[in-house]
Length: 97
Image 1 (cartoon, rainbow, N blue to C red):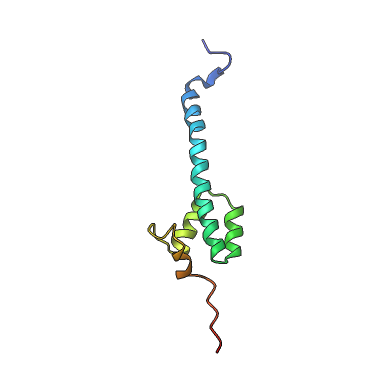
Image 2 (spheres, rainbow, N blue to C red):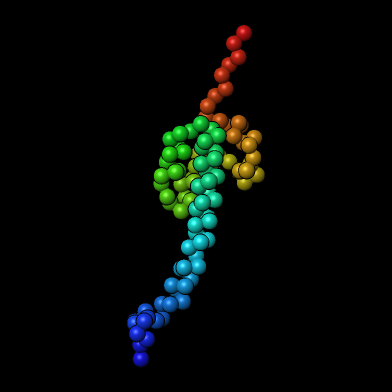
């Protein structure tokens, strides 16, 4: 006998609860990588990357590609401010004498 509320979805209930439990984890994952990538793009003066990362939502994939393949950061310098100056896209202005 089928339950009136669940109908024929009874066997799927555990998967629905698992999916609902994963949503906050997915949200934290995405916000973490987006925030880190936006911070690096802003510090390096890269407005097009900043805008693309802000608008395009790909579950952290674009952010990870930007940080590790475009900027070529490592896990050691991912959270340091020194890494921003090492490979900055905006060259320093030469000092005029």
